Image 1 (cartoon, rainbow, N blue to C red):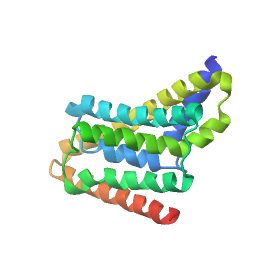
Image 2: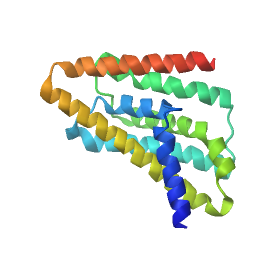
Image 3: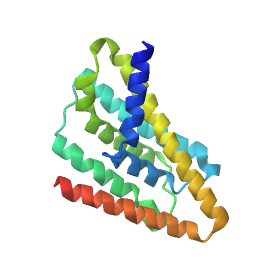
Length: 188
């Protein structure tokens, strides 16, 4: 039981931090950068909402057989990343209303569908519930690591060069946006 838990926990962490698939990493960085340490509760809410969407689609794929065209899912993933860069490019905090919450949850669902087919093939039926839970926990832990690094970098930059934060956000936003556009072109 503990081996199963640790296996899927590690798989969840690796899924987010894998250098071969930086889409999840880029999304979380773009989501995190506009926030400061004083906003950590809001940011935790957004990241957890994304994880819930991700988990919902894995659960739906596994138990209800959600099936979508892998072509469209793989294309939608970098589109969600590009869209998440808009607040960085415009120099604004993302809106935090119901619409934004629904969008974040849907983005999580889209990202989860990208991994869902693989996850369904590898999880053993008797370990499905434990696997889904520990995988989601691993995803959340890895995302919180990325969020922490982003917040520390923001705080350090704000402390050293307060006027540079806007340039930092815009520069990282442009980089992630360009990477997302490259992924889109690669998948068309």
